[in-house]
Image (tube, rainbow, N blue to C red; front, side, top):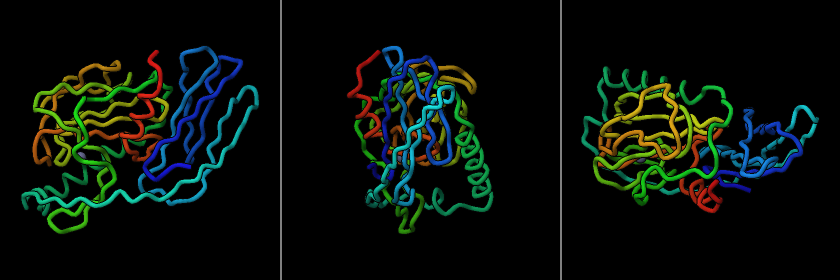
Length: 257
Ligand SMILES: [Zn+2]
């Protein structure tokens, strides 16, 4: 059983060297090798707004015909509400800005919907910055009195210029400067896991670059729609918006390799 916006973890042992495949929410992706040979790990996520109910997760090893299905119950979760007051020009957008925002949303969506690649990540994932959460995940947003999209990541505390590091090995699939996100980087870790880093002061990697776990991607800032320096940090698993906090807790309990 998992909550909306939560993450599931799978670990299996096999006799061969073939990566088992996970099927979840009509997506297929491979598990990553764990420390010992024949042990495989993988994550799957339930989107913040996924309809509560039972969903099958299937693990398959194609060459051996192995197939196991587990029904996962997704429960609804109330993440609460945040109320923000922002300068009017950052909320009530003029036609040109609205066009820009739509264009940028489409670019981001396309990058996030890329087919899952083979896992580049090795467990455990690390934190992008050490700062505490100052803006929790999942809150419905009321901005200047109007309902807006829920908060799809966490806001982490830090000073302008704090190095922001890649949470695992991967490939930088998108960088840019968007109206809401400011200077940002998106990293694909393979195995249907992506991480997003927004409001950077400076980006220190380029698109298509391979990065390693702990490598500095950029510096914390307040670009885009931000009330002050912080890192907006998001994780997508199989396209689902998940809460980075339980994901990171799960990783903290894993032994480093
Ligand atoms: Zn945020």
